[in-house]
Length: 135
Image (cartoon, rainbow, N blue to C red; front, side, top):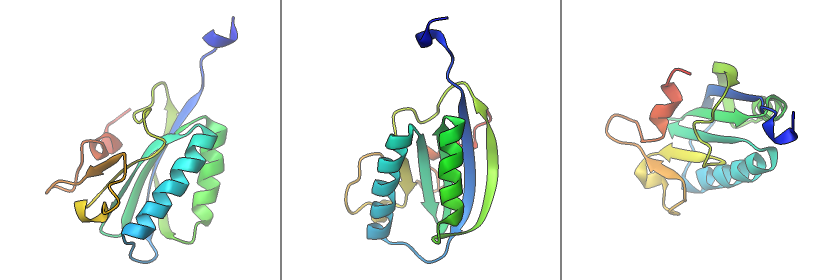
């Protein structure tokens, strides 16, 4: 079988965690830029939701890359009470166009970040609803 026809194994990991301290616009901007850089290097795509001091993040990519990022996240002092919501093999990415899409309150987007999806009155965005979809 030619290399281009070998299926790529993908995995999705969704977790929640509580921020150890309140985060503002600059904090979130820095987190997002750092995540986008690292995720692009690792071939990871995903989405980060930040609301009421809680992160919900979905990361998608090769299992080795997901594990490497997961180990790093578990050591990150900005997170506590980390809980895996889903970790499973996938055949298709939900966030293929984003190294890290981001949803939060509109006022936290002072820097007009690309890939920002503001939360509506129900605490959801057009991208955050994909976090709770069944595989």
